[in-house]
Length: 357
Image 1 (spheres, rainbow, N blue to C red):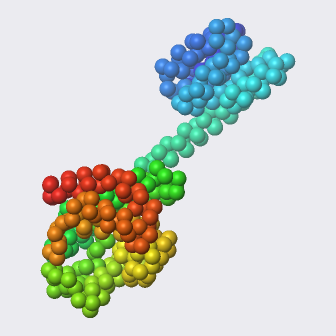
Image 2: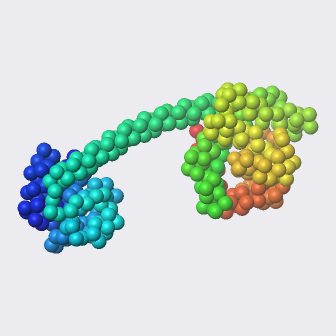
Image 3: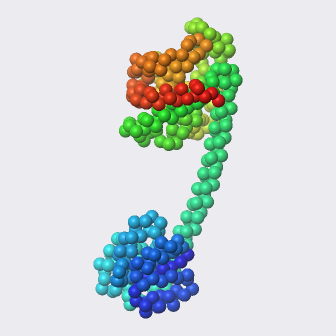
């Protein structure tokens, strides 16, 4: 840590230098010299700054360093004359932390410099501690996220092994979810809801929406024709199975945000905006946003994809069906958002349809 003394008075500079000779000192005769030193030496932590100097005065130096986030961290003590109270006030308003009046009182100068050096050392130690702590937290967060993603991928693979869903469907619904959320966040109603973290959770957990289907018999899941009413009632249980599976796997499901988001998606993506959906007949905004989003994305991808029980519909036909179901099956606002980026949605579908993985 270095202390910069800025004063055009050679005698005052000498007095200060002698008093602080056990510190690492630099000196400058005016503001211009001081700024050159500040720009070239990042170790300057404290500056003793005279106000009345030629070329560039102390106020101008304070204004200059105040415009830079790095330089403004320098703790500045201004030197003023006893009759310059207005200068003291202006200097403090421009960012100075303290002032010392001339003629200099040697003992007072020494004590006040020692105080600011101790404060600066404490500040630097705290910043270093925070940096180490933030680095450790980031590392642990990344580790937890990696574990989460591997776990989700392993669970989704159970569906793929049984040919219930393809890896392409997983990627399509993930990227459609991300695209729709990023578009909606440009609107006032969703700007503060769809944060970066929430969108990341929706992206990661969207593939789990049908995980409960692993509990449904193949004779129903893979049936090539229409399900009977009895079979459909059994099929509807996949939402309950999925929710129960996650909740039983972790008794903190309501506390861990990404598990809570996954439970919402699994349990509510078959609810309908008019209350006619399942499993709980939720209506309107009673359905979590995650479920309302997943409902549109899942239905669209099912419509435009070939399934064992139906051919693929054209993109425009699928959009017309979604539009017709606004306010019935789907949240009208989310349908509007989906239709506004329909070309982007189609590009995502085509990308993963053509390049399976």
